[in-house]
Image 1 (cartoon, rainbow, N blue to C red):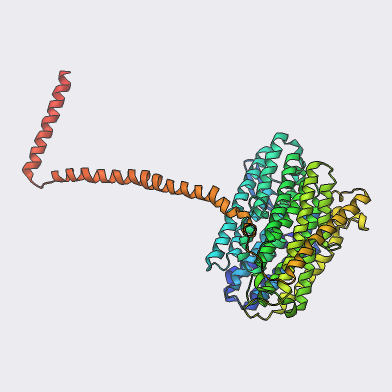
Image 2 (image 1 turned 180 degrees about the horizontal axis):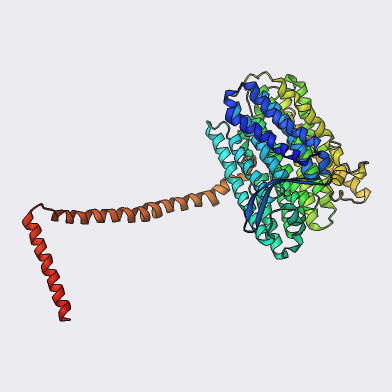
Length: 618
């Protein structure tokens, strides 16, 4: 098989995006969507055909795009088990989201712009996954940021949507700055940007430099994956169309940070401090986001915080050294989170465009099929026993527990408690949306079949995704761990494992029961300070406004008034006024009278003679 076929993985969505961007407005509307869908499905087909190339790891170079001063960067792809797994997930889920978007956006006037951005977004994500060097990866990294800005602010005529797009762009740029510094630093230390070479030579690095390097990489990952403290953009990103939310939250942008840490794991794992910080950031973000989700009222914001929380689990897995557990949860999460977001879009249509779950209710009777599909997603998110979400999350917590030290035990405890919170807000969402009487005032819209029939495949993969890496304890063979060549799932004595499973089951029930009691027959929530605190995301936006934005605006205003207006404009305008003033005096000499000019000439001649006599005397 010709390995150059791998370039079609990126070129197909790139071509779809460019054609729609240049000619989409002149094409028939169905053709615009078909072109975008065909590009992604074609890319998925190429990934399946090329899968055998991944077993041994295939590297293919198209050309060198930067060379000189010791730097050499290729347009080169690395298709190994990790990349192949991610490519199949991204193109597979993105294909279903594109089909769903064709139904969701069928009445949208500017379909060409939407599908062009959607195709380019997937293209940029595939660049991140397949790049064999950090420069090409960085190109995709920035491409994802630019496309997400356009997609989140797609309905830019509404100021809140435009602001959400701008916020996502700026906050993720902060993380990108850390990544840029790490990239340049690695090049200065090792003289290469090739990822395989960096991982191979990581042991040559000075141990004292490893931790700051890992922390810089973590900063970049936190920006893209919305982890503490760069997480405030994600809930606001819900202003974008629902297919965009599904694509960003399930399969692409937020997973880029996890992928970066997994791709550079041989380097990252050499720093124990860095690993501890990664695990801590993941565990704390999981807890923070889950606590916020329990008080949200908008259905997409509940799911946004749940995404942040689940990505936190993946960071925790990387931090405790289990790449296979992180990728396993990333895959399963992609399936059930796409299912939930796409289901949420259909529910919003059923509720007449209403996004507030307090104004929903009773939607089970309106569309029973949608209820059962959404229930599968909720069970996976809540970690119901024997679902895909249960197995993948259990593997992460087991990896944390098996370290056997106090620090890891604390992380494990946070993870277990967060699992209970996840169960609570998941069932709270389910009961408020589907049970009781309809509390809204808007009439529902008829659903396009594409909004419903794209969901069953995701439900199946979410429900049975745990089989991909089923541990030996359950009779599985840990296929994903073997495929990735990663360490097998952590093992503990069987009695301990049974005890941990029982505990996980208890926390699942402990979250479900209060949700059932309080929200099965919903009669309203009291507006308490702690609910407002959680609703506003622990008021991090207000905190950042106080400690960063206000000082920044004050400094900018000071520089504008004192520096620009006072100093620069003052000097320039002052010089101008002085010249004008003196020009007035000289203008008075231009009288136009010959006798005046002769008098001046005589005085000038007299002065010159006097000067010459004085010089001769000296």
